[in-house]
Length: 281
Image (cartoon, rainbow, N blue to C red; front, top):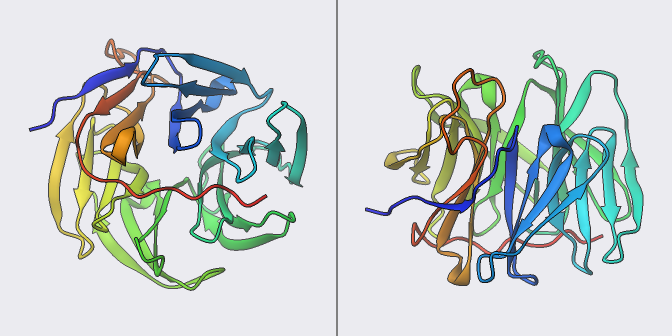
């Protein structure tokens, strides 16, 4: 049995979006409501923090350096020298960015949600490096986990209030044939962020569940890792060989947060992750 450790002791309001940056050999993660992008180098312990100036749902590496940011008012690019520019400026009152992921072809799939979590107020949009934005889903409540099977033919997706992990057939620039992979039962929390491992299994962080679960490609639950923070938000493999599972957590809304609520946790040797492509833009 793998033991959970503390990677980054923090008090993030809404830690989210862990992403392994292979070029920098570091973990990227965000504190959505504090408008901050964090980095963590597990080899040295070095950490950095960057203030984005507005709520940030996700930060992912770009192919030529810098980051692509899913922000409250749209999707933006930062260069290695810190220069900032909008790729797709789309401010909507009462709406913010949430989770995002880079597809095998290098496009960014970016989710949004209303602050009041109203059904139908969120979206999922596919963005390419030239700024083209294609709506994929337009009737989402809380757009969360996004990931692809090892061969890229399946896309997994979570709209948290549905309590489902859904799967689509994926053909590069679009999806079809939505169906349910797994349902999170009452009392186990809500599905939040996800990642897919090299065996094609789907790892799901459970908000208010204090755990990460692994589901097989057929939807069977075959593993659960309990964690010392109730609001686990997202997970990603990183470190040498992509064998360590990093898990972000949140403090927001908790009347009695645990000491590690808001920290980044890690389960060394939890599995074997898939290399994540950078954004081509």
